[in-house]
Length: 196
Image (tube, rainbow, N blue to C red; front, side, top):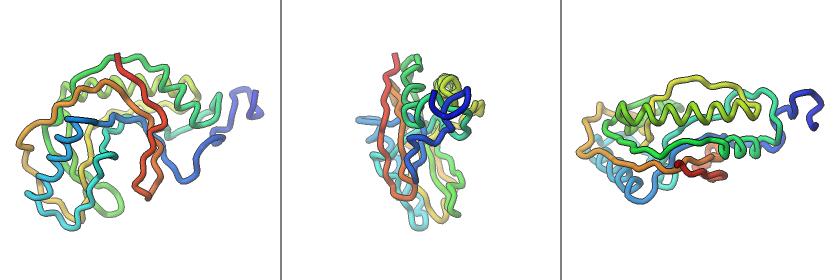
């Protein structure tokens, strides 16, 4: 076995430099259009200072990221892909019904669309299933609780938002693995798996 110990690889073989990895839900079609419309409506209503939009092709709801490594049984990216392929979960309806604000880092706030309680339960269950598969493939355990949301834009200052005029209804039938090129506003989808 490669890696020089009983458990396998040290964890950095096949890790693309300058990249971060995460599993996510990526909207498409009608859901993507609806989220984009809520983003533009919020920018018009709130008039934030220097808004930096999340482009439509990078809109996503993060599920989990491989933050802590144990010992991998294959190179980094293939280990993530094998974990994703093991997940067996059902499709579900996701409702994004409220705005929220977070500190997005780099001294900027961000406006997000948050999911309702029922949707959050489904998202958490999928996240836990992915976490279990990651653990089997040598990644550390992530038992955290999600606050499911889609980030719309970053800005210097964001006033308290009102509720969206309409909810976003999204039929979630797949999840993806994203390779994010840090600081370059570029996401590559390197794995895609259907939900039953």
